[in-house]
Length: 291
Image (cartoon, rainbow, N blue to C red):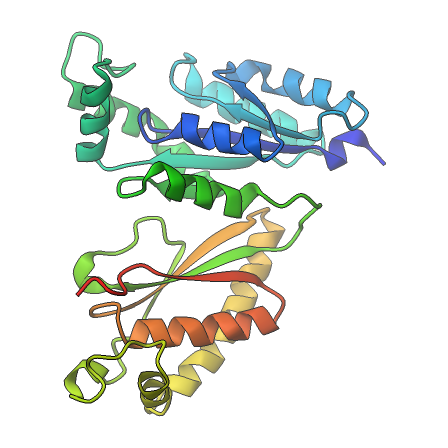
């Protein structure tokens, strides 16, 4: 077997201050060989060395960012060259909101690498513009605005922690409330507000979608079962396409008004169906208990 065919490569990139170092440390703990601040032009050389290691270095994670000049064009060229060699790199892109990035830079009292003589926010804006195209083609985008270090490590471990060859899709089904905002890192968003809201049924209001009375109420509504049937079939088509394109991690967000009843019940049902279909799935209820 061609050594390059078994080599795994993750390129960790994204906005300065969004958690690249934390992600890199997590990957290192998971057994990846991590190289920080590698110029994009050296990526093919690193892959070649890994391929020649006779299995000693099978998983390489490289942190690439705007500290490497000619960043965008060099990285695209390098990724194309690597792809032609038989290695299929995955790109992990980390980002955060402007307010969070400003707070983080101010807390460590360091300038933004693209700030120059201007303001911190100007450096952030320049970097976002520089990375816009790369973000759009990333395999996994993680927004760390509201994540602590442990939560970020958990997401990275969920995406890259498999010790085997792992060719399947790793899916997170996330319930949420629209009134608290859309999950910015969602790949797919399902809106179940078309179903009657248990909040307006007095005996159901204190319960959540994990409780049998609410679950049974939601699933008994007109359109609930049909939605699950049709959406499950649609996801089968989408996930097959993801795998063909080399995407191994996806976040499916299911939303209702408050993230307590309908979205929770439907997320649980959808995840159970997908698990039966062979999808590696976990369920997270973002806004449960927030009221």
